[in-house]
Image: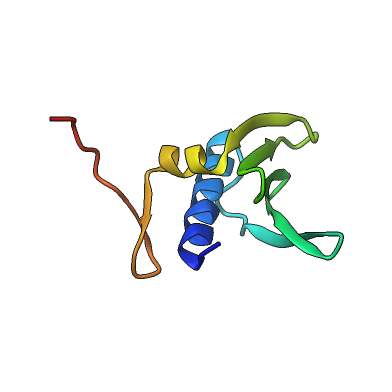
Length: 100
């Protein structure tokens, strides 16, 4: 996993948590997940909303304040929906292009 990929997923998760109702004034928390001594993903939290990114499965699950699963999607689809491009360390939206 490259830093670029992590930054893109991190920003996509932040955007989705805010769309689901997390207060943007709360800082996003992030924790690495280790299973049987191996890195397996990340947990993100913003207020009472959470998301878990399972690296091997390429899956992100978003949880509401009561712990209920609100959305399950691939990390790839999450980044594409957020329309994120990372270059110099700052996330910028990619302009929409029309097919020729």
